[in-house]
Length: 206
Image 1 (tube, rainbow, N blue to C red):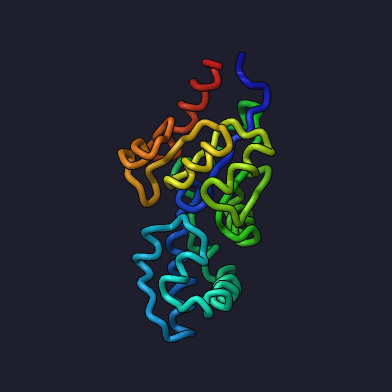
Image 2 (tube, helix red, strand yellow):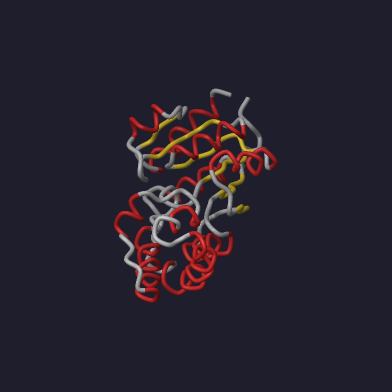
């Protein structure tokens, strides 16, 4: 018998939204202000880990906390508008609701920044948890009773494993479909346009 009210978790960057243009703009502004060269193309090719990890590649450790603060100050005006929803994102969220479920975004992004993206794009997200990465996402998902977690990064597979959920991966981020399979994803989709069909079928088999 299908779940009455399935809770489905989604990553944000490169799963629901293409945040590369916005993040690139924020890093470009930070580089211009500080005079520190940042390879923005490289940064946006490997989105997933926390901001502090990426900034440590460009600034000495003692400057990273101040750079985090400044990046987050720049982010709302520079990064929200240019970042569109990825193909199938709106439909995937709607599919969960159509089946009587609820959606939660669990992301390493700063919570207020993540919420700005969700609100700007009008995404049908019922709950949001930010500032958690990889297996540290597990408790947030488990506490909400999530049965599926969808992400684009191998760290999202670790999150699903930590939460005891089905690990669905989409090949819209830095990892290929083969790499995501090798990392242990239960299901690999090219993008979220394949989610509705998979989710409907998965529920019908429960």
